[in-house]
Length: 400
Image 1 (cartoon, one colour):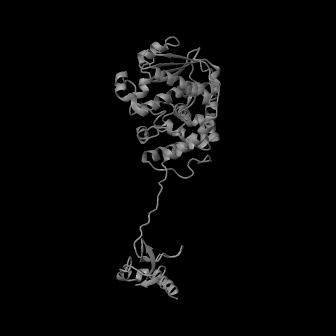
Image 2: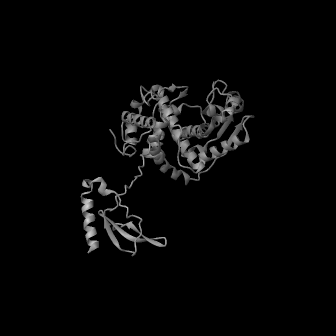
Image 3: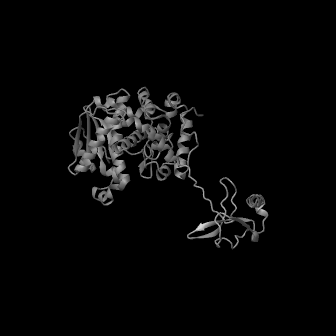
């Protein structure tokens, strides 16, 4: 009977808890005092206690409520909930692109003979790095057509050294400042690289760049992705159905932001395969987004927009646009844009890229070029602000 009475009292306490005076809710002094018979219950000031073993003796302890019932203790209990923040736009897009990297890992395509010419100052580490990247481009990449042609790469640490190193294949003395480049020589699909420029920016000397730890992690990333980037240009020309070893302007059949940006994204995807790590692109950053904020894809199509000392056709604008396309549709689908560009005139004949590309873009990517440009700015703005994206933003669906 005493236990039934206690339960009834407990119910009254719970039902009217807010109306109980503060002094009635104070835990009485009986807690922890000695008792004589284990299991005996007692109610003091509306709180139920049970005689329980403690060490070698017995003491009164507040009775534990049955599982699922309200607590009878008046001691304040602090509860915490783990709030998981929404992933940022850059994280969500990178994770989506990473799902498309899986198919690249499964490839084992033919690696053709590649000729290398290294400047005298290029160390063995950079030579091994170059070979690894060039071979991975063919083994895991999306342009097996390029393996049917002669391929070469010239690597240097300065403009002067680049001219000397490349001379047996092509005279590039009139190129001016050199970072990287793809060109048809008439014999080779040729990639030219100045690693110092990629690591520390154009105009940097080898000594100054070395003092800056060769640009750190970002410099290391940009060197590697650009080797893949330049090979990708030759691959795109071959995919369009043209001979990549011939001097040509076929890359200009595509908007600047696409031709450059898609090679960066493919390069970053290949680095994920080479390193056996998730996809990552450090050029998708608030600083790069802000740098090219006034250079949307409509402006970075016919002319190479340059702001803050760097081009926006790749990092700054092109990377943002192409990440969005690849996240939505996958790299191989996006490269259909390259294949069909073989039927488009070069950009000197466009009034704008919308007029040249609108029907193809709508068919491949399910929205108008103008609508896509707005989405690119939505993505850029979210990266700058460090916020997330609408829930369906990366769905491959029709958009207005």
